[in-house]
Length: 69
Image (cartoon, rainbow, N blue to C red; front, side, top):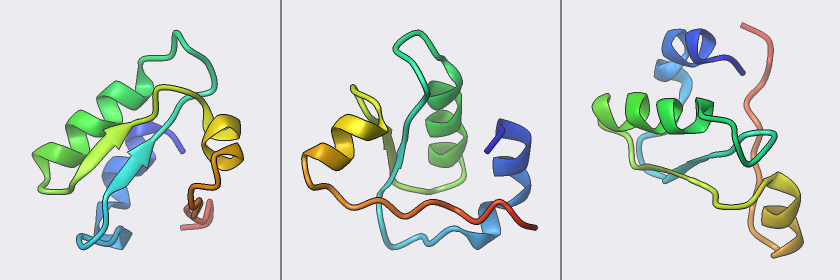
């Protein structure tokens, strides 16, 4: 999901859970910007240190947003 799409779909996100952002690689800055946007809008958010594969390998939950509007 792009940052622009995230900004337009904030109303679809739950406010009662922490949202974890991740990027496709270690040098991606989009997750930093996504977390900043989410926090500014009142969400609890953080980014992963590792990627999604490492997150899943650790047995942590993943719920991907629908790509459809």
